Amino acid sequence: MKVKDIIKVIEDFAPLSIQEGGDNSGLCIGSPEDEVNSVLLALDCTPELVDEAVTVGADMIVTHHPLIFSGLKKISPDNKIGAAVTKAIKAGVAVYAAHTNADKVIAGVSGAMSARLGLQNVRVLDEDGEGTGLGVVGELPEPMGAEAFVALVKERFGLKVVKTSKPLEKAVSRVAVCGGSGGSLIGAARKAGADVYVSGDISYHNYFTEDGFMIMDIGHYESEIEIVDILFSLIKKNFPTFAVRITQNINSNPIYYF
Image (tube, rainbow, N blue to C red):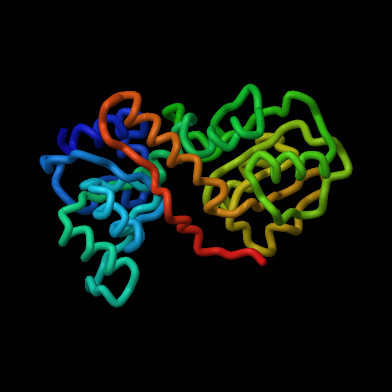
């Protein structure tokens, strides 16, 4: 097996050509021709994840978030990105990321969010003209009150807390979702007729919502983590006997709740 064989499976699912401008999805360390015997998957590539890959004998890491997102002026083990890059190169571990390309396919990040909530008649929220795009919108099987919907979201995503704008007085029926940092799609959610928009990294002033519209921030990590399972299933389906595993020891969420 070669790195390029794993890449082909992922990019058949989420082509690099649809990633957002300025993103850095794809192979950032290693060669497509490198031999690979085992893959380790996670949301973020941290120095600890590279150490885990070495420990379990994985010679390729696949994550959602790119290890190298913007240009590096230096590579130093004194910071986390530099340490991860250094460790991966020294150990001969290839590093690949499926980021906004995996966000923009309906079976990717946002589609997984909608499935958790049981949304029906799901379509892309902000289409790019090719049947792909950021976010999705759909309908609940049955309308429910705002408090009941908050409870549903907390239960389905395993959350202790959420942040919301003023709860709706009307029933929630149509819901828009977007994994990760979704503040830019608030207008699209309103235009799509959503009663509630569920995403992450929503800034303060956006919570001053118009009547009849509600925002819910469930967290960046929490909204995206299921993509790891999706990528695992994708690789395992195509290579049933191949050694692929999800990180067992590392929760890379940098945000703590008390």
